[in-house]
Amino acid sequence: MSETPVKYENVSLAGAQFSDVSLASACFNNVNLGNAAFFDVALNGASFNDINLRDAVFINVVLSGASFNDVNLREARFVDVALNGASFDDVNLSDVTIERANLQGMKINGILVSELLLAYQQRNETGR
Image: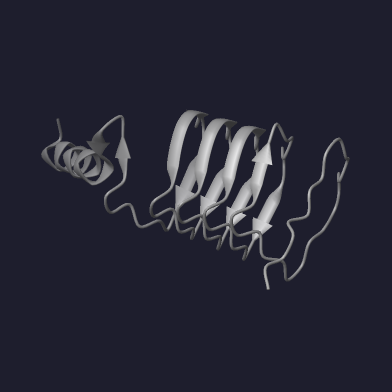
């Protein structure tokens, strides 16, 4: 038996708290999630379109296969998150912090981040 998705339009949920909730495959369009905090949340395959996530915090969050399109993530913080298969397009990542992340296969503008980090490390080791 499939569940009918809940749909919210033109609603203020400012200050709302959600506990023991699955948001897998949730779709967020034109939503202000500034200063939102996500702890231990499954957002597998979620879609974020035209979203303000400025100063948002993601801790122990699964964002596998999530898509971020036209999203403001300025000063967001990602700690111990799963981003495998996630895509970011037209996203503001200014001053974003990523900690304890597996960056295997991650690319920025087609360049593997692991290669960028290796080159940076080698440059610092040689003192150049």
